[in-house]
Length: 232
Length: 405
Image (cartoon, rainbow over all chains, first blue to last red; front, side, top):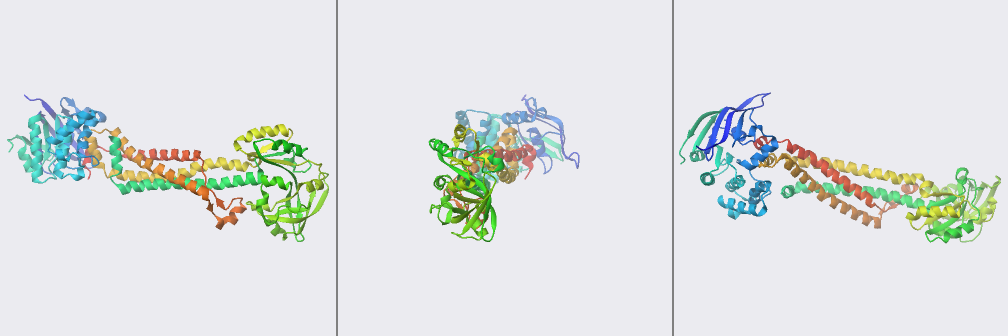
């Protein structure tokens, strides 16, 4: 049996608890096993991003706990949490993913530099990663010179850089045309299959949902369904 | 890497960064200019006082300063002058006989300080000959020749060659009058003194005062190098053992105060300018932080801890200041150097300035110490103005930051 990589236990998140409380996520239990390719779906405002942020240690649950690879991240101090994210979780956001003043190569290398990887090893790994996402000819381009799809692929390469156990992606295809979206998903699916990296992404894009092997549907902050499916 | 990102970040919005840098340049330049201008003015005033009026050192009889009476004299002046002249550190030395009294013209009278001088030695001492506007500087050789200020002549309604009468008391406390003919009219940079000081031949005044030959009231010394002032003062003590020896700061304490208060001005003026700059820099940097909230959130999410974010924003502000300050200093220094040679002509206001003892051409000057103060304050500004925007960035929570549009 595969080991549990993410265990969100009875997680709730309430915004503005003192004024007008908004219960974004309510009593959610999620177990995700190593190597899964999970889509978190639901209408706008259903709590997808909030749940994803809590599972990635970007947001603190109001109640409940999140355990990643045996570490209860909800109990970590702020700096330890940042360090934990650096080494264990890769992030891909909908937009504003890259540091605009750095080239593709530097953006991917940035995370490795924060981990103090020696320069030679770093450069090799960065090139491999950018080749993997098909951007070997764009290594010296800055984000402004790349298309939306290319930027997302650089973001995926960066998320992979520190060899994380999990990659969390918040609506990664929301700003992409269908060709770029399909391309990005193929890359993600390939990495999931070949490198056994766990992918968890929120989306309401039907093309993306079809590619997932497990689909968790959230409505009004609660899990409505959690099904396994065969990707098409 | 942070250094590189911060450096590139400041060039993301070139015009904004250039505005900040320019404001720093202008601020630093303005500070330097104002200070050097003020110092040039004061320095001028000090030099004027020292070289044209006080000299570096004056020696009197110990009670002369209190009573201002001509009977308190230094004896054997001629011999002492020779001793001073033999000292290589001394540029010039001269003796004076001094009395106070009244000058009377056919129409009016005025109180004056009468200096009995040796015309030849004053050419190198207070260079009075350069100030003569009308007539000549004791050229006739006549003993009753008098040199008075233009301003006093106007007040007395007298002209060149007019006759005036000086009335004063001699050493026996008898009232003495002497008739003099105006041989020259002078105008110095300090018009208020022109109205008071009159100059006559030393020998003649000595006779009128009934002083013994070679007795005088004052010995004035100009030194070659001001660094040697103390040494010359000590030397003077050996020559005139009973005399009261004072340097120009003791003779005119207000000049010494000007120098001391100027340090305070330096802090105040550069402080005000830099404070104004600080707010400008904070405003700009805060804008730059607030418009990058999502990006900063992303950086935190991918693993840049808060201390690194803090350092990055601090560096951005620091870079801007560190670019602006040296350029401002350089431009300021160039301005001071060029204007220090050519001078700034304020002849439009010169009448007013001259009456306060200021020259109409100002040569801006600033010593190194002041530049150091400005640089230090500039760096303090850089750090102070960097802290708040960086602190503001620390307040961000990554998930909230990413959610913000």
